[in-house]
Image (cartoon, rainbow, N blue to C red; front, top):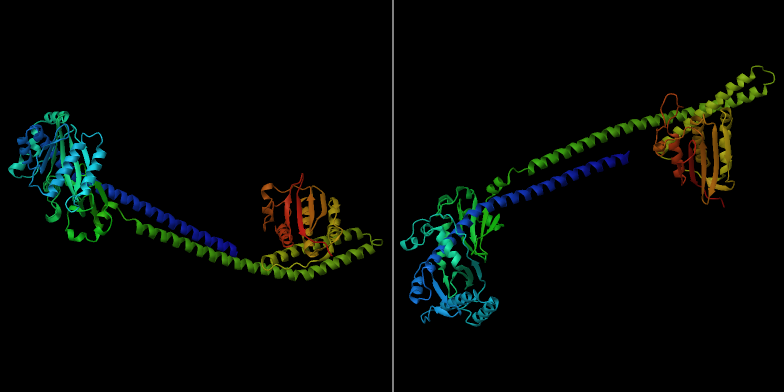
Length: 599
C-alpha cells in the first residue's frame, strides 16, 4: 500500500516537473522567435536610410564622372579648375608610367597635407600596379618611418569599381547654394541615362577609402583612357554633412521632420537610430522621442544592426527599441498566462493525488478491519473445527468396530468419511486464510529444524490419498531426498497441501498426480504435476497474485485464489521460489527450497 502511494506521488511530481520543463522550453522558444521577429522588423526599418546614404554617393559618382569626362587631365589649368569644385579637396593625376603630373610641388603645404597627398598618390598608382600589395606595404613602411605625430600609416584601403547600373530615380535634396545646386542629381540625370551609361562603359572608375590620422578619407578614382589616372579626394566635412542631411532631423520635435523625403513606413514610434563608423564612434543619431530617455536603453545591445552600403564599408546603422516598442513588436506576452495554466494543472494533479491517497487510505483501513475480522473468526473456528475432526475420526473408528453387527454401518461409515474430508478441507482453508493474513501484516518467522523431506511428503500425501483414490487418481511418487536436511516442516507441509489440493480440485478429470523430490546441493526441489486442463501461458505469473483464479465460472471448483500466493511466499521466504514449468499435459509446479544437509 505504502509503495503504491509513493509511486503515485512520484508519478505526480514527475508529471508536474515535465509540464514545467516543457512550459519553460516553450517560453524560451517563443522569446527567441520574438527576438528574431523584432530584429527583422527593425532591420527592415533601417534599409530606407541605408538607401539614402547610398544615393548620396551615387550622386557624387555621377557628378564627378561628368566633371572628369569634360576635362583633359593632361592640361594643368583644367586640373586646377577641378580642385575648385566643391566635391574636391584634392586632385592627383598620374600618367601611364605612374609619374605624378598634378599637383606640382607645393611648398606651402603642411606636413600633414603632404602626407595625405602621398598616401593618395600611392593608392592611385596601385590601381594599375600588377603587384599592389607590395606597393602598399612599401608605402606603409615609408609612412611609418616618418614622424608619427604628423603622418599615420594607411590603415585600410578599399576600391569600388564603377558600373553602368546607374540609378533610375533620385530624390531631390532641399535647396542649397548655387554652386552645390549645379551638382544635384536631378540635373545630372536630365543629361540622360544613356549618356551616363556611355561614360561608365568608356572609362573605369570607383571609390577608395583609407584612414589618415584616425579619420576616414574618401576618394574617387578615374582612369581616362590608358594615358591618365586621377584621384579626387572629397572634403570630409562635405560628405559627412551630406550623409547627415540624407537622414532624419534628430533635433526636430518628435524626430519626424526629414531633410530628405523618406517613406513614412520606415519609422517606428519608440526607436533610437544611430550611424556608427568602423571604430564604433557615434556619427549621428535620431529618434522620435526625446533622446534623454535613452540612457538606460543604450546600456544593452542594439536590437538590429545593418551594414552601410559601399563605400562606407565597416560603418553600421543600428537601432535601439524602447520597452513599449519591443513589447508591441514581440506580440502578446504569454508567459504569465502559461505559468498560471501550469500552476492550475499542478494544483489539480496535487488535489487529485490527495483525493486518491485519502480514498486508498480509507479503503486500506476498511480492508485491514476485514482481514482482522476474518483472522479473528478463523482463530475462533479452529477450536470447534478441531473437535469436529477429532470426533469424526472417533465416530469412523467406532463404526468400523461395529461393522460386523450393524447392517447400516457402511452408509454410516460413508457419512463419517464425508465429515472427515470436509473438516480437513475447512481446516486447510482456515490455515490458508491465517497464513495470508500473517504474510500481509507481519509474516511469521520460519522455524527450521532437522527433518527428512521425503517423510514430510509421505505424511501429507497420506492425508489426501483416500480422497484421491476415491476420485480414481493414479498417484506416481518419486522421492529422492532421504537424507536429513534443515527446513521448516510446517511451511513445507502447507506448500504441499495447497499444491496437492489444487490438483485434487482442478485436475479431477485427468485423474493423474505425480509427486517427486530431488536434491541439488544446498537446495531441494518438489515437483507436483497433474493431467488437468493446465494453465494458459498468459496466466503463468498472474496466478501467483492474490485472489486471481484461472476461471470464475459457476461450474468451476470454488476457491479463494490465495493458495498459490501462499506457496510462492513461503518458498521465497525459505530461500527459493515456486513457478509454473512447461509440461506436455496439464500443469506442473516446481517448488525450490533452501534446505542444507544436517551436520
